[in-house]
Length: 46
Image 1 (tube, rainbow, N blue to C red):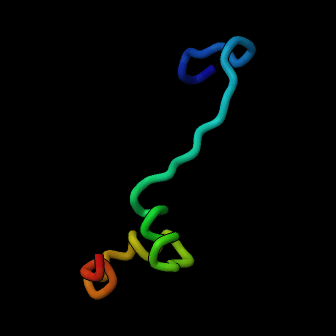
Image 2: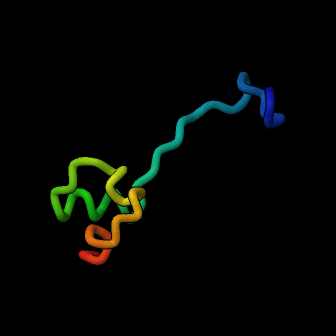
Image 3: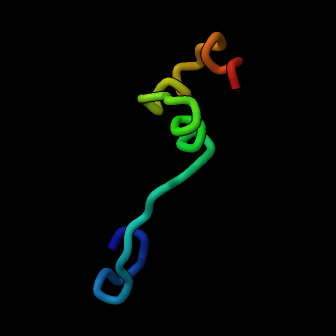
């Protein structure tokens, strides 16, 4: 494989629950991309 791991020996999956996801749930934000737009009017709310 490209990173040197044998896929027959190691399997799994990855997911993230970062601060953005927690803020989305808490504040009812429907799209994680809002955090990446660099719109200070939006970001200053947090």
